[in-house]
Length: 433
Image 1 (cartoon, one colour):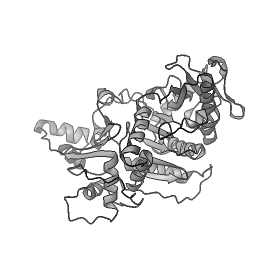
Image 2: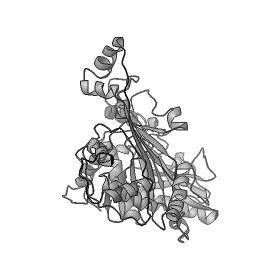
Image 3: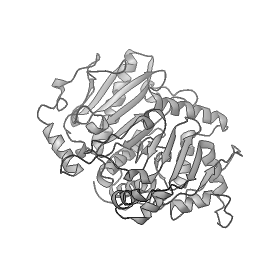
Image 4: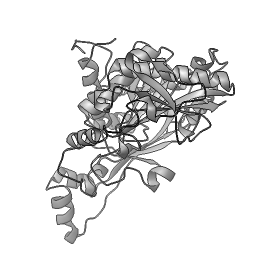
């Protein structure tokens, strides 16, 4: 890929600093509100952003688009920001200040005044809590002496001999056979240990390492392999209509095989699972509650206005303020798979090249019309969204999920704006297809 200079409508806001002690409950909504400008707010930090949101502070001059942004935010989310104070016993001070925070007095002060940002989607009830200081909490040390990238390369090389996915001989065929993309040696298979009525795999036979994934291969895996697989299943089983894909990178993220592979599932009359089912229902309810507004496009507009999103042709990327996992990036499309898969590829490369995250999970939903050839009536069944989130340090025995994430709320400890800037660097690095 060549380097080019590009000037998309990017809005970049500085890193998250400290959080203000406020709660946002803006109740007076009119559903005919205007979309805030993509350059509505240009704060220098999140502390500045929170100050702008704190309407009780009358000393701050706010832009004319500010009220529109608040209305849009409130239509989608309940946002609460709180601050507290804790007392560190004298005998515990050396542990906290000198051991945990290595003498950093700024971090020690943040610890004494814990601040949390809580964001709840009004339509899915999904909640995330952000406390950046949690990233520094005591955890088991990483295993081995290698850095994460070296450790991943060793695991990948060790798995080459006898790899089940480097050719078709060690994969099970679906009842209809296989979808093959001959020029790039991509093929489909049935999941040997299926977890739904029809569970497929899309495998790039020539790419054993996820580090080597290129755009033509990723696009072909989706457009030329996954979509035809969905159509084949639908032609045999007409009740199966709603397509999703899942893709875990390395065992820390849940992958049973090192070799890259995308899982394909086709739900019966609805998107399988919680994430996409909730989003699809949210889109329908939001459309009705707001007099025809689009849930996903309003999410994009809000994030672009906050400096956490960019648009590219018919698609967009956001760093969600309501993520499930750290570093979570969403890719939202409106029908054009080329635009959508390009941004998906850039998000994929951002994790590896910029964030140096080598274990991550992703899931994608596609419109029903890409399977049935018929556009659905109404709003339901028209998702084109990918979510990609980090799964922690690949070399650490520490688990990145707990009862908190399973049964309560998502705990986020990474900087939204740092992730956005990382994507921006990737976006500028590659020329578009």
